[in-house]
Length: 150
Image 1 (cartoon, one colour):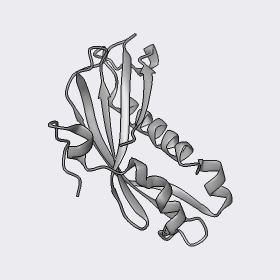
Image 2 (cartoon, one colour; image 1 turned 180 degrees about the vertical axis):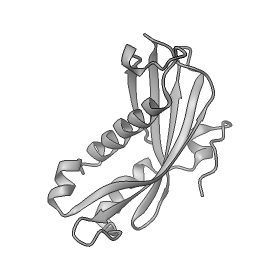
Image 3 (cartoon, one colour; image 1 turned 45 degrees about the horizontal axis):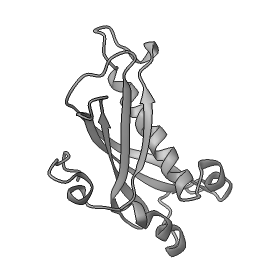
Image 4 (spheres, helix red, strand yellow; image 1 turned 180 degrees about the horizontal axis):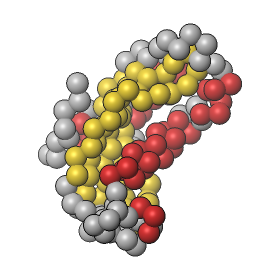
């Protein structure tokens, strides 16, 4: 099973008025994960733009478990729990320095044809590039269950 894993640091500009990471930062961190996934499957954004399609989001869900604070190192991981012809559901987990789950979430994305603005199906070759990152939530998370995605 492959996951995209990366480390983040909480900076002062991530902090909200009550002293912990602002909710919008998690969406930015999810963007980093999606970018890393596309790079890992050799489909970086600039390359797919040149081929006439683009990744877009249609839904985001995040559950916050514990606050993260200034200066903390955050461990992030992501994988795909569902891969369809033109869309995918991506799962994310963010852990604090003690490896305790601080937040989890999912995003539903799809590929759009840039000219028609309609969903674009992945070719069998393109789809196969994502398969190593496709895992059920139970496989990827063990006993921890994420919020169910539609």
